[in-house]
Amino acid sequence: MEVRQIGQEDRDEWLKLRTRLWPTESGEPMTSASHVTLDNQHAAVFVAEHEGRLVGFAEVSVRAQAEGCRTSPVGYLEGWYVDAANRSSGVGGTLVKAAEDWASQQGCREMASDCVLGNTVGLVAHEHLGYRPTVKSVFLRKSLS
Ligand SMILES: CC(C)(COP(=O)(O)OP(=O)(O)OC[C@H]1O[C@@H](n2cnc3c(N)ncnc32)[C@H](O)[C@@H]1OP(=O)(O)O)[C@@H](O)C(=O)NCCC(=O)NCCS
Image (cartoon, rainbow, N blue to C red; front, top):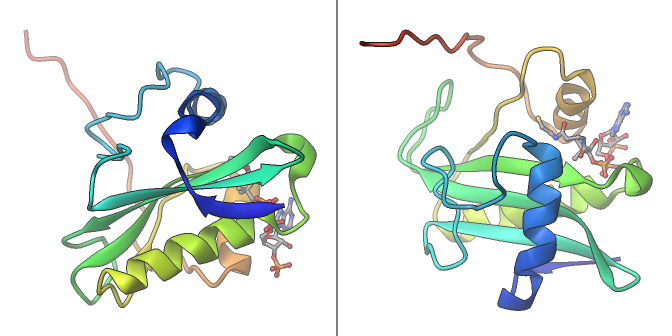
């Protein structure tokens, strides 16, 4: 298994993996929430390749601040996914380490992330890698019409 920064040739496979993590999204990476694109210098995508195919990715960006963090800028784990057949063998941890090293090279001294309430595995995996819960909040919406 190899973890490396994404290349243009990985784009289609990466988009397929993205739709598994975010089934309601089209897969296109230019979401206002993540700002992750292949040519954004404030963000990076790392992919894990195993036997010639992509089995996971981590998207990381540099944000000015993040809830519960004490420093600025902050590395933010925008997306993290490993194919079900390849979980619990260290792929996710290696991807996060690559994201953290990249954020550190951008001058970040802290990492932040988020996890949907009820995603027990996501939370536990974060905690195993040293992440601790900070603020717990709920997103709200209202139509203006
Ligand atoms: C979260 C996810 C990316 C982890 O990937 P992974 O390849 O299984 O992660 P790793 O095998 O590197 O495990 C990382 C750490 O979490 C722990 N962990 C992973 N899955 C676990 C599980 N089901 N139960 C308990 N601990 C678990 C590992 O033991 C490891 O800790 P360690 O280094 O102390 O041994 C993967 O489960 C996934 O894609 N889940 C669906 C998408 C998702 O929830 N993403 C995160 C959004 S918050």
